[in-house]
Amino acid sequence: MKAPMTSQQKKIVAVVAALTALAIIIPNTNSFIILLATRALAFSILVMSLDLLLGFTGLPSLGQAAYLGVGAYLTAILATKFQFGLGYDFWVVVVLGILAGAALAAIFGLLAIRAAGVYFLMITLALGQCVWGLAYRWNSLTGGDNGINLRNRPKFGIDLSHDVTFFYLVFGFFVASLLAIYVLVRSPFGRSLAGIRERELRMKILGYNTWLHKYIAFVIAGGFGGLAGVLWAHTAGIVSPENVVLTTSVDALLMAVLGGAGTLVGGVIGAFIVFGLREYLSTLVPWWQYVLGSVYVATILYLPGGLMGIPERIRQWRAMSGRAERQ
Amino acid sequence: MNTQFWVIQTFNGVSYGALLFLVGSGLSLIFGVMRIVNLAHGSYFLLGGYVALSVIWTTGSWLLAIPVAASSIALIGLLMERFFLRPLGFDPLRQVLLTVGFAFLFQQAALDIWTGNNFNINPPDALTKSIVVGGIYFPLYRAFMIATALTIGSILWLVMEKTRMGAAVRATVDDAQMARGVGVDTSRISMFIFALGAFLAALGGVIGGAFLGIYPGLDFEILPLAFAVVIIGGMGSLGGAAIGALLVGLADNFGKALFPEISYFTLYAPMALILAVKPTGLFGRE
Image 1 (cartoon, each protein chain N blue to C red):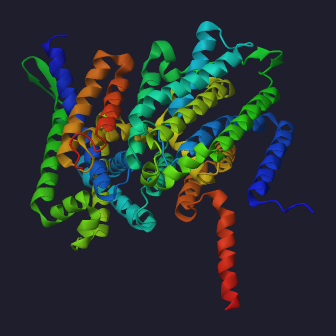
Image 2 (cartoon, rainbow over the protein chains, first blue to last red):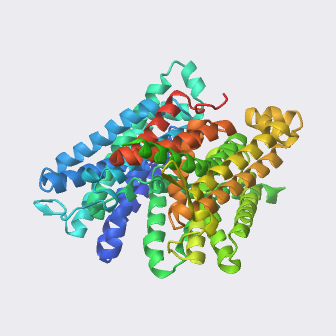
Image 3 (tube, rainbow over the protein chains, first blue to last red):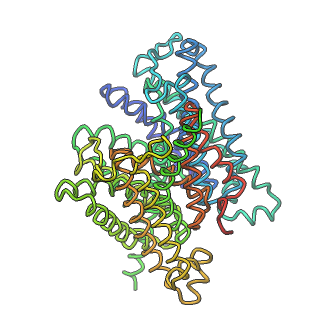
């Protein structure tokens, strides 16, 4: 007889099933939904990178859009000024985008990692604003307020301007990122990060170099942010200061918290809900932002564990009412 | 780049700093007392401007608009603190996120009530003139902004340094737990400071609306600047906020005039460096 599945295995099966369903259903819907899902998936990579910091390391970053911005601007500038990255060299741009995000995080991390809690929030905000300031004002490089328009998506054997093909490409990157971050947080390194999140002093006393752990996590998150940026540039077709502005970082943070910090897939659910509300509901009703705001407020007030915390909540509630009945 | 350029830019920088002091001082006090970053602070600024517009449209009185706008936003801040932030207890991250949720709600409400158009708050004619000193024109309104900030700053300083309430606030900033221990009602202090912060931000919105304009998105434009003030000046310190506001006002003005392409960078990069070296800000207490 086969051993019953552990809860972890069940979760993995559920995620794989959900992803398979997504890959089958989305391409058969209309182009609006396909584009919406592509955007949500590309942005989800950024949200997951933030969750690596927020949920697994305990570092609430309020400047994560900076890494998305670096990847996106790099892609846009290479494509428009040098005609680079529109063929097979797209893969070079992917690597460069990841490296650029990681490099920026390597510099920012030197400044930010020393701080903790709300101070970390503040310093990442300031660093994010530095990048925004450059994007907004450095007209000759970034196109200033207007941003940069990308005319074509890359073509290499497959034509990415075809929306379904592009969806599958982004989906592939998304799954790879999810898998990579999942392996990372389950590794001994990831366990040490969780230890730092729970009690940094204890980890220090146990002999861990907590600064280095946090720094490496920060750099890795930056790399995934850069990847998200490369994909985002081609998804949206335009890169502008809007992508690096404070509200984009705030969005990423709220998506992670809405879904449930420290769960990876929670952030993805959060991203889909927010993109869905913002781009679908906004076509139906003018007051969609009330819904979004109320969802945020309600989640933070009543669901500290996010949407992924709901099953746990129900279990607790059942256990409590069950005990009450027996008495 | 003659003397005139430097004099005018300095004057503009100082007057902008005066406006930033109104927004930043409240943010700083809120942080000092509650250890939370109020991301809805820019919304208070914007809503203050909008409420003032409504008052001006209905009564035509700019003078009446100032107290009405500031008080009504203070009431909003008070209710928000009492009914939403307080129940979360001491959990800074969730409180911060909650203020963002509110910032979005306020954004939508402002869009519904006041539409997405750009408005200007027109001050009385007496304040729109310029005075000429040594051949240089100084807009009177900017001088008025400096005078307002000086007045408000002095009142705040007197309240904080000379009254019992002020002493309790300072005690809470330094060590909230100890303050509670000796019988300070920190919950009431938090409520009071949050309302005061909202009041000051809204006041800034009314006064700043005359030369920044009032438009959607202004909330998240002014917020990072207010942060720069708080961070450079040190969190929870009134004097620090004044110096921070002055520095940010000057840096912003000269940055835009001298190196337009990297002007925001010249503002935020020093801010990040200061934070990295001294997380509590230049004049913050440990």
